[in-house]
Amino acid sequence: MKIDISFLKHIAELSRIRLSKKELKKFTPQMRTILDSAQELQNVDTEGKQPMKKYVSFSDLREDIPKESLKQEDVLKNAKCKEDGFIKVYGKVFGSIEES
Amino acid sequence: MENDKYDLIIGLEIHIQTKTKSKMFCNCPTGYFHKEPNTHVCPVCLGLPGALPIPNKRALELCVLMGLATNCKIDSEIHFDRKHYFYPDLPKGYQISQYKRPVCSNGKVELSNSTVEIERIHQEEDVAKSTHHIEAGTNLEYSLIDYNKSGVPLIEIVTKPCIRSAKEAKEYATRIRQIARYLNISDADMEKGQMRCEPNISVQEKGKWEYKDGIIKPIGNYKLNPKVEIKNIGSITAVEKSIEYEFNRLTEALESREEIIQQTRGWNADKGITEFQRSKETADDYRYMAEPDIPVIDISKEDMNRISKKLVELPNEKIKRYVEDFNLSEYNADVLASDKDVSEFFDGLVNALNKKVKDIIVSAKLAGNCVTGTIFSWLNEKGISLSEAKLDLNDLVQWNLALNSGEITKNKAEELLRISLNKGKDLSDLLDEFKQSAKDSAGNIKDIVLEVIKDNENAVNDYKSGKKASLSFLIGQVMQKTNGTANPNEARSILMEELKK
Image (cartoon, helix red, strand yellow):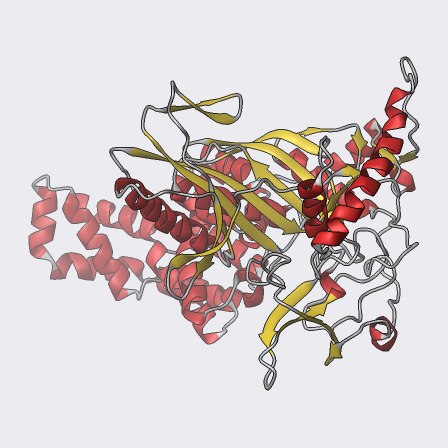
């Protein structure tokens, strides 16, 4: 994978984070270092090793029983904007990050 | 819809909210319809940091059940994945879904003239409901979000691109809805968003493509035309209409050499057209990864056996049984099987009759005609459903028995049934009254026969000179004079007896 400015721009857009040209330039080498470090894992020889997975049996899954939820006022406590019990989000939700 | 030059290729994605009491990964209640916003939410379905999802057993059972009903292969393990995208209706920043290993795969659904291949059915969670507005005064665009729907169990059923007409797509969607309702997997009400259909369609030149290994491939150096996805379909009818519209739009665009881009379009039911929503020039980038918060779930043989027991007879099988066992017409069988309540009512009627009659085929046919004929037209007039009508099964059993034994003619029987339905009179009482007056008139039936012979000299002479059809006329006269209470078989034998003299 080529880690360049356009890659970083793409990732930022997917995450809905607006980065200036200066920031893109600054973060690209940093991102490369992070991903290179993670890439080290690929060098481990896993030949013949079982993948580490946790299993649970179907019968032990959660039974379908509804329980009480949070109170509306508590739910909305952390919301920056709210209206009539809804969480209010400004901006055009469709469209790209440049437009919003 | 047929076109000389182009073929229509359709794949259908159907989302169904399954019928559970609690959400997919938390205990919040699911019934959000008409509820105060943001009152059915908790740290898990709000995606608060540190909250852990715990899968709902019943939801996964319903997903497996849908797979069994559509002849899918069921995986022995359930693996969840994270599908990442940022949008206000998805508070975690990812949706828990399934990517590489769906619970169910490679199924098929039989339609009247074709088979639809199912690629996969996987389990996921629904997102929040958002409505979009423009703020008065500031003119700013904003959205209002209600997280009650967030985390409701959702299954996605994906077909291969093997559907070839709008009509076939409609039939398939109808069949899927039927199966979901029969098995109580979902109410699958499209208006309420419990079932959502998204067709993927493309138009290709005839002879330039082939369907192989579940995908559409170009022949030679033909370049396949891009796909269009249709969203915002609110009814089964709109599935057919929107595809028809899009097929015409695409063929016209191709004919006038317009460039077609891969895009998502929304169906506008009021205008009967599709409208451009967004282009899909870049491939979606969801950065799937295995969901680390949910262990792999083992499905044992015992689990499968337990779930398969919930499979009931499906519409296809019912239609086959009605036609083969009871000799019903395809049309009547289809009408009776199309709705679960109706078919259960009919099955109940036939089962009750089966204990009392020798020839169940004749009785079942009568019962079928009675339900699809007199009862259905009455329900239509009243605008109510069969379950709302609360008909008495025992009354109808008595009614069928009387008709079966020849105690009452078909016309008279239907008349009594209509009176009972329209005036809310007890059908058994009406039948009893009828039988009593039949008994009363039985004594003088011979007198009436003699009277009819006397009054209809011409018909009598015709009969005697070999015109057998005249006998029916004479029986009809007897029936008329007794107000339909006479037993037609008895009238016939007495008439023949007297005419020999």
